[in-house]
Image (cartoon, rainbow, N blue to C red; front, side, top):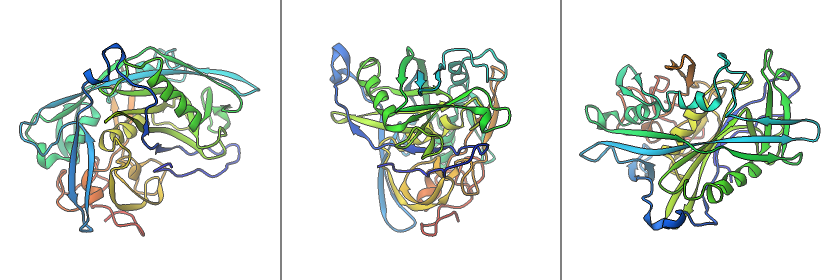
Length: 386
């Protein structure tokens, strides 16, 4: 079952397709991890558990990646984060297109960057000075700045940090046939659209990603790492490979259980063709959610009619309430120029306290990290924000 999504309606040519985000439920790994050393020698990613009494007087428990901001002796936690470029070739019976994030991308304005360069040089992995909700929260990476912001009342003045230690793994090739994928011209949907859009069936794609985790990169990817899978202008459709049906998933996060431990992972698309835009908006959305809701089912009071959620949902997905293009108010994005000269757009994220209410653990008067939410969520129905 998909835990958080909305489906775009069929469209006529010339109308841009809608992008959205989802989760896939955690599954059980079919293969052991750890290579020749065995899985018992690998330290899993650090996780901490919380218990909170929400505005509805109910108690909710969940798990977050990192170390608890409630603990004394706060320090830096490092998360080994592996970028896996996916070179996807789609033969749809009419055209054959290869989408290669390791090649120079002519749709990037400078014309000299690969998509891997764009990601590694982004504020997701480089340090920048952040002011969130009027408060300077440090010179650091974006996800760490968000973690500090949503727990600011606990970590202000401390060395609490969650750092993504990035590495790039060998690219992996995926071949997609006409029963699984389709190619489209970007210019069909957006004036000035650049190159092609590939649409692949979500189930087919996720099976391929899990096969990489347990197959060609088993051991390199393990319970102590967080792999993220980069696609170039390839998006996903649910039980479809048409841009007109149940499309378009720009990214998701999920996991597999390996014995008693959790292997998290997150695929995402870097869209440079002008149809969806947002450069690392998708990655910021998914990384924030994977850290705060690694098992994809941290329960919350039911919320909705906000962001991409037109109905109601009840999990701790910090990106969904502020997804661009949804129900207002949506993301007040951060726009940052990287050291590489590229301009990056990062989605605003909803704080822990937006979902649960009660004492605000974030920056006083704010419930998201760029000023959009100044109250916590309203129960759904009707949903919305106080």
